[in-house]
Length: 150
Image 1 (cartoon, rainbow, N blue to C red):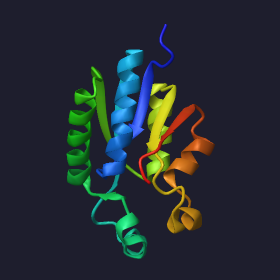
Image 2: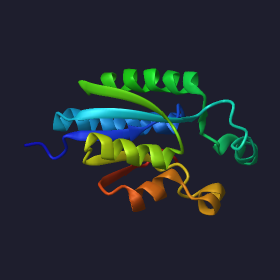
Image 3: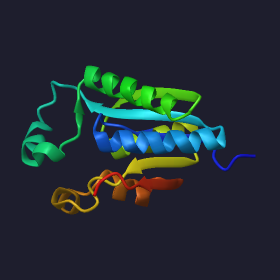
């Protein structure tokens, strides 16, 4: 029996999230596990995120709108397949990244959640919290934090 049966990984279309997808795909390949790639998005009409995105500038990786999320998922799926994952599912969901990832973990019965380390050592990560640190505390399953930044 494999160590992991279902692996969830988040992507926002950034290079660091794609590195996490590739690592998750390699684990899925080695475990013969299903890989669920998730992209959280906020509908483009929401104004409540504009201020935060403006303040965070290039660290604001919140995907706004369905189309960018779908594009990120297509690219991530291609990368996962190239890394050897064979059972790949993609999901786009409206909501905050941590909440969306936790919901997908619960919905799929996943036993591993993979995220990149972006945000752990940034100023905005320390002030506002970060996806890697929040999921590590709240996921309820094993979490692999992939070193994706210098």
